[in-house]
Length: 428
Image (tube, rainbow, N blue to C red):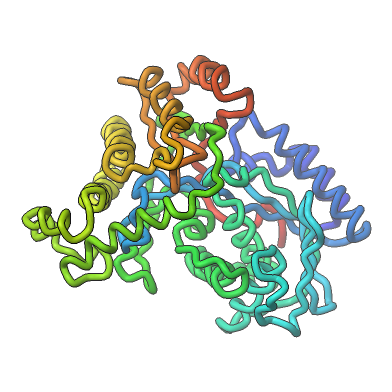
């Protein structure tokens, strides 16, 4: 550890540029250094000067392939991005964890009270308490610490700001009290436990895994209790493209039924074959029995089941393309995924408001701007919100200008795939 004032001096002097350069684009480095210095000063203002501190980061994530497959025990390709939650933290000997996140009230968790509290359900103190509880239950060390955090992971964008926060808390505990011996996958599992049991949200493991592991990550949920996780060796920085997340501005309200229907219809199709999820259904048997599914469920269930089977196979093909370094083949598969989500899974707009199709307009623009050059698809749950595009760097300025002219000045976020997940940047 080092004194907080020394940390600021070292950041300003460029002593950590090589470490920060792994996490952020070179063009963003000066802004990131200012961000860390500002947070360091905020720590002093909240917790007092003269403390020994360490510095941490955990990224947001993007879903690259496997749209609406995880809930039916399918395969997903996800990746960490260069938007992140960061922290300046210092141990204390009080048995209390205090985390002050910019724009939010202080989260406080006593290590003597590591159990779910009803009044914390759905609030961030539950995540802090849950991560600490899971570390202790797994036999790892826990201890008090104070931390100031800030995040530029876009809330409501499908980039998983909550997972980034959970992984950040786990990464701090890992290095402050466990010498970094807890691996990234276990930190993801700990984070999921905190969100499921303490926060009260029944999320899967995709978000936390991508945030914790970083880079491109394939996750196979055939056995959800023990998902198979593989990190993909691909250097995104060398492919000549940027990842753009485009916020269409569509309203997320009143979409619970739409999301539930995707999963429900897939599972209803599986029940025709005596199974609970489509991953356990033989595809050839399904194709030979489409008339039965139409009769027992409905036509949309047939289409959504087709999407599941195709998308599951597509994840494997995307991984193979990346491992071969064939980014052109990868982009073609991303486009196929997007068309499948639009035509078969039908999660680009809601039938409740058929004239409101902001996501569809964004996809149509990407088709015109990127055809033969890049790739585009709906991002995450769909029906509203964001789309994802891989844009060649030589046309990026024109692409961004065209998108922003329709959806607003702050609608196109230019990201990179970050090669690492939750990390300690500065410490012992």
